[in-house]
Length: 192
Image (tube, rainbow, N blue to C red):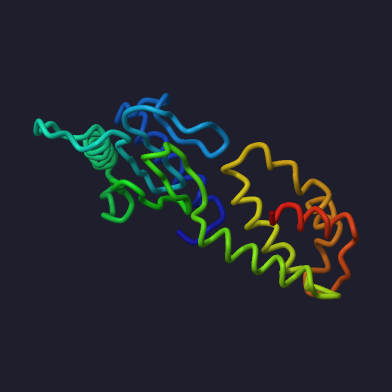
């Protein structure tokens, strides 16, 4: 869409769509909350909707619940004049990655894939070894850490002082700075 409120409009259309499709809120995956444990699950972000069945494929020929939900969402979008793009509705197979997170049906968990976490840890370690770091790099890595921590509620406050420091440095994005010791330790702890 190319203008600032576009994400808000897209999310509002998606919210209306899942409501019209009668997707149960008890099966919705929200990063801040524990993942529902039984049956099928679903999630949405901006204009993407996905679902995953947490039970083995049915041998009796019955269709999985996730596929039913996705078909209802497609119909709900069409009823309001939106032609869904094939990439915007996804029925995940076991072990699928959606919205940047890996959905593990066997362990019934949602989290950032190990490879992405490892790459982030490498970037953080490299940054922490520098005497001075670009503020814009610090902003980007803190944002990535925030996303990774969105799957683990207990880690949310881990970067409290780092975010405060970044707010102070907002106008100096292109400067090289020496990290205050407490920010260095917060980032190091967050990496572990």
